[in-house]
Amino acid sequence: MKPPCLITIITLFVASAIVITAQDAATSPSWTSKDGRVIQAKFVKLDGEAVVVEKGGKEVTIPFAKLSAKSVVDAKRLGEQRTPGQADAKTGTAAVPATDKDLTIDLGGGVTMDFVLIRPGSFTMGTDLFNKGTDKTTHKVTLTKPFLLGKYEVTQEQWEQVMGSNPSKFKGAKNPVETVSWTDCQSFVAKLNAKVSGQTFRLPTESEWEYACRADSTGTYCFGNDLRSMAEYAWYDPNDKGTTHPVGEKKANAWGLYDMHGNVREWCADWYGAYPAAVVVDPQGSSSGSYRVIRGGCWSDLADRCTAAARGHDKPSEMSSCVGLRLARSSPP
Image (cartoon, rainbow, N blue to C red; front, side, top):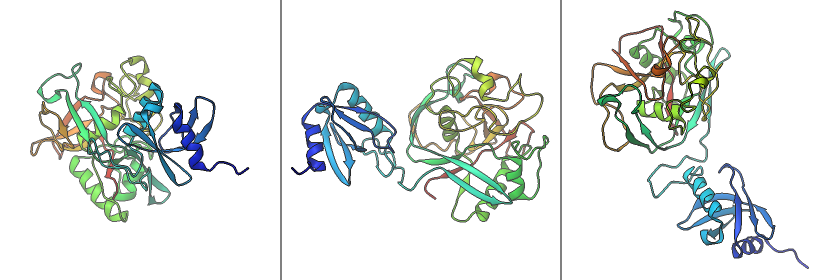
């Protein structure tokens, strides 16, 4: 007797109510029928009131009516993650190209720089708890395009490898560079883009910064609201010892980004200005101003200055031993 072909097996699954064990969209989840039959089939996309899976190069559509309530929720969650190469037609969010991934660039001299792929999505920006005012108004933001963000703050060895000098007050190759102005950062970006072929790096927008800092957290910090956890994630007052510290020594947030709270504040691309009250898509900040945005808090700040929503600002020419930077790159280049 010939063994049943793949399509026959999947058809049997569709004919009965099945249960999905949801895993990362990039893997092949286990699809299990109620009578115990199991296959591994890659999640492809949502198609109306159904989910499309792929096995052995064949795509099969499974109606939600054949799935348990939990399986429908899991399938929709995978759909919201937007499998690489798939656009979200409902929201208009751009696809993450299948070739997109985290990035490491070689600066020479054994110095590298790591970037984490941040997928598009929506979040509530601002806070109703700390730093109230018209420039902190909570509002819904949607980012429609993926981007890459530095896994760590730019270090002194990275800056020196590009610029040929180190302006920092607190010396240390792996410590974040500081005492750099916003204008200095633009020079760094220009030289880095000339040095690394095929890449276009920049400072992140303020909305990109907060979205990545939160990493789906709706709390005051990337880890929620429990201040007892703060020292696990941040160098700040009172654990700073009066200096910056090597990047990456504290815990990363849920998206693998380090030192989003504390160590050094980080320049953003935007002019500083009042937040809008309405929903915004891919905001670029104020069209003009006198100050540039600074985010994240630093080694000498108390916890309420290091929140995900806390904003700072300074003149583009100003510099401080509390202020450094983290780079972004639009994706793909």
